[in-house]
Image (cartoon, rainbow, N blue to C red; front, top):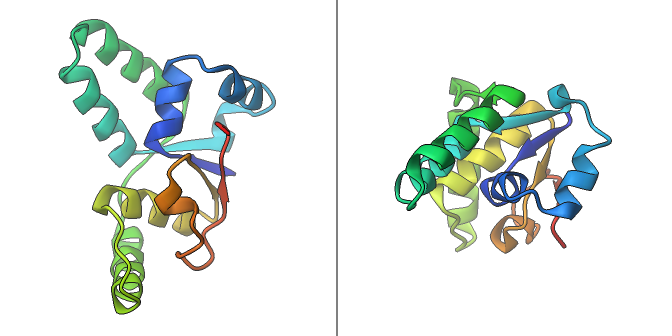
Length: 133
């Protein structure tokens, strides 16, 4: 696995945004992974939308296309280490954002995100690409 996709990029995939589609065209589905946390966030958005049935189906289709990555014990161990390090430096990240970032770290993958809080370089060894800018 080369890339872990963050929620904002998964939303762009669902919205068929051109920069993301162009990047995806050069990759095999097994090159990407979706954290179950991303699926949870996408399903939340789908459930609160006006087109619930259609949007849930779109999330399910995305989930079927790419490997889904569970939150494992090594990921939560890393989460604890990274969050404690950030806190010691007076920095905070959203819990879901940090779990997704720790998934990329554990997978040895690049996190694909447009989230400034994850692109700021504050998480050691986290490699980030932004396919939306």
